[in-house]
Length: 230
Image 1 (cartoon, rainbow, N blue to C red):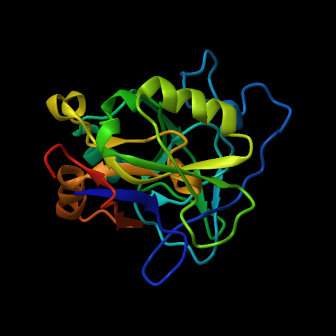
Image 2: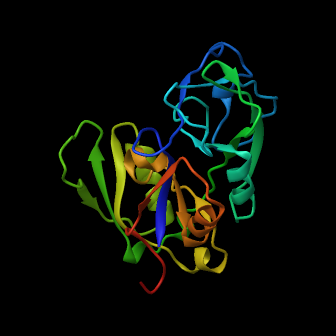
């Protein structure tokens, strides 16, 4: 089973959110210049992470849209769990965290920049199902089905339609390429609409997070992603 992982941004249960970000939008080295396809050739500058007053000092902090590229804002405890897994290339940056006007000395927090990898080759297209849905379509319907027969066709369609459409999938069947060397956390870039920015994890990482007692995250099952033979 696979799961969508994201930091919790509201109750019930403890959570943390990066509420205010005071950064220089014109700075070439500010954290919003980080990318999802390459590590920086500069030392990125991060402003203090100013948590909302309702936040708790949990292990995952909600920071969507605040930092450039793809990644996770995590405590040292969560980072230790993640670094024991098989991950795409990543790089970590220590952060200063402020909660209720006090600098947090412990736990320590880090931005974990995780690169997107070219992984459409993991998909068995003959056993997968895709659709396109316009950005402005608010209906519950899944969109217009499209037949995609190869990795190249998928890339071409996304490039042609990404400005106006979401690429959705009702079923993604992974193939032997992934099965021979499975990642415990990954992303499928542009597949899944707005949820494509959320990382996907497997049962191995789910169990490790639970065993470590990590807090501040939520999981949602992804029954649409299946292994060969399922």
